[in-house]
Structures are given as C-alpha cells and as structure tokens.
Length: 263
Image (cartoon, rainbow, N blue to C red; front, side, top):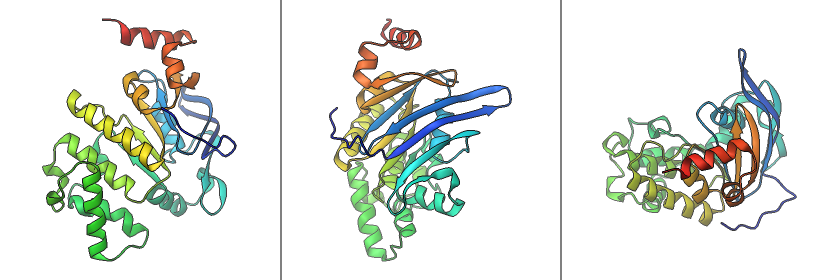
C-alpha cells in the first residue's frame, strides 16, 4: 500500500502504556504513533496483549500508566483518559469508530438497519427524517447491502451482512480513526475475502486512519501499512508490514511467520 502521510503531525500518540491484571502484565510500556490515513496492524498470539492495548488506546479501558493522546479538531493533542466521560463518549460517536469482532456487540439488534446507521448522525444533530434515510441508504449501498432491507432488523441478516452494517454505522459520520478488533474472525473464507476487499477500498477512499488487531497475518498484510508485533504484553517488533513479514528480525516474529507458511 502507498500513502502520503504528514510525519510531523501524528493523529494518535501512545506513550509508555501499561496495564496489569493482578500479577499478570497484559501490556508493558507500549509506545507508538499513528499518522493520518495510516492503517496500523497489531498482531500476536492469543494472550499477547494486543486486545488489551486496543482497549486502552480506544478509551475503553484506563491504563495503569502512560498516556494516549489524540489530535482533536478543536483542542489539538488531548489526553483521552483525562477527558470527561461525556467528551470521550462524543469522540467515540463522531470522530472515532469501533468495529467489533462480533457485530452484535456494535449494533442495536432490536432496531432497523437504517436506524442503526442514522443513530450516529443524530449524535451530530441531524434530525431530518428524509436526510437520515437518504444517508442510511447511501451507506448501505457503499457496504454492498440491499437498500430495500433498510427497515429490517440486523437479526435477520447473515454474519457477513451484520459486519458490513456495523462498518456502515461506524463510517457514516466520516470518522478520522477507526479501531477494528478481529474484524473478519469467525466468518467463512469467501465472506472474509469480500469484507477485506471492502475494508481496504473504504479506508483508502476515505483516507481513514485505522488500528486493526488481528491474529491473521494475511489480514494484516492486505489491510495495513505498518505493523506492531506483540509478545507477552510487549511490542517486540515494528515496521512496514511487508518488511516485517518478508524479513522478520525478532525470533518471535520469525516463529509467527514460519508457522503460517508451514503446510
């Protein structure tokens, strides 16, 4: 992938983030920058700390130490964990998106597909019913869902369709940063491939920055510009995705790559 980033102005700045669960160090002194329009993958085995790090960075979990700063539209760099709960919640509804592994966690299953998409627009003050439906229809088309099913509840959708609806719900407000937690895990291979193509085209077309947590190195290669490799709570290697996967330097990364390549 290619992208033109302003390397002097990170969108997100993570410094020395750590999180313990009792005697278990889930994340240890994690630091990195994320740049506008950059897609960053965080990879590692189950238990490596990647999901905990994502939760800390996305404001869902407060780290024990360290800071997470985001370049806000009106206040510049701001520590998200020093924000009020209301400010952080508004940020999550507008300038951020969060795509859950299980779409049910990111959708309201009891309301229509169109209402799921329109809710985030209403958080920005949109109240015109016709405009809400028009934008919902537009985004359903963008994620390859039938607009005629706008009034159907998500429970009537297949797993892949729910995931695409969740993506539409997140992107309708044109966020600058989207967090993705194993976005294709649990889907059939053919459904995964279609969803990955959709995610890649949308992030590129919209100039989105994204952090993708995945155990699947093929997903990381397809979606991300840069990669962090985690082992036992630490970032043990980082670099451009193709460089890390084609010429891994750390023994753990070498093991991860070789295990994927083994027949």
